[in-house]
Amino acid sequence: MREETVAYVPMIRDMAEQERPRERLLQVGAQAVSTAELLAIILRTGSGGENVLRLAERLLSQFQDLAGLARASVAELTNVKGVGPAKAVEIKAALEIGRRLMASAPQERPRVTSPSDAANLLMSEMMFLEQEHLRLILLDTRNRVLNTPTIYIGSLNTSVVRIGELFRAAIKENAAAFIVAHNHPSGDPSPSPEDVNVTKQIVQAGKLLDIELLDHIIIGHQRYVSLKERGLGFDS
Image (tube, rainbow, N blue to C red):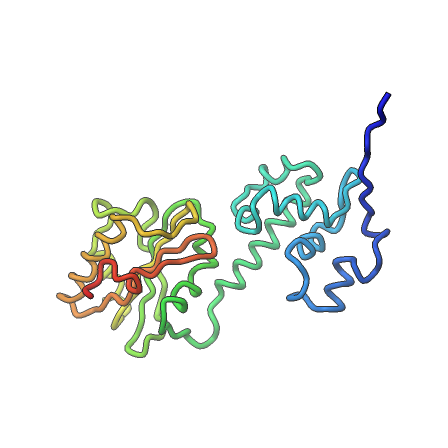
């Protein structure tokens, strides 16, 4: 009778000290360790003969990296072998702290001078959303951020978006210009015909009201598209 082959997976305590996640972070710094090692430090222990580093790697693979983990519910996480309610809550809490840190504004108002500035301002908040959100980046005459209000939640199309609502928010903040940003929950930031059509309407209305639309940014998972850079919806 053929015996079943069982893989040997060393526990963290059996690993060389310089290879353990916590010790490696102390030695080389947080920025130098892998995402799996950081997650392993949060989880602390493995389960069922699987060390915590392998558990972390399996979680990242199953949910397709941190973006998937952030979107997963506590119930979905607890369905994973080796992840109970306590570990699931720890994962969600750690990711939420990271999201809030990225979203927190500095004491001085940030200045937006490029599409990457605009995307980076909102990406951490918007790339994990399960519905489309439309937000504005309202700017003063020096391109400093006045506010970033959410105007719509739901599918972005011309039958839903009332252009006047966008400009009402801009006028309320006395904005000199603004940028529109919305997310694609699919993760693919490629512009749709509706995205281009909405942009054209906003550009035309801005000319009448003397409040310039500087760009329309579409946010995906760790990616974005600037319609201004692509010449979509804006006069060439």
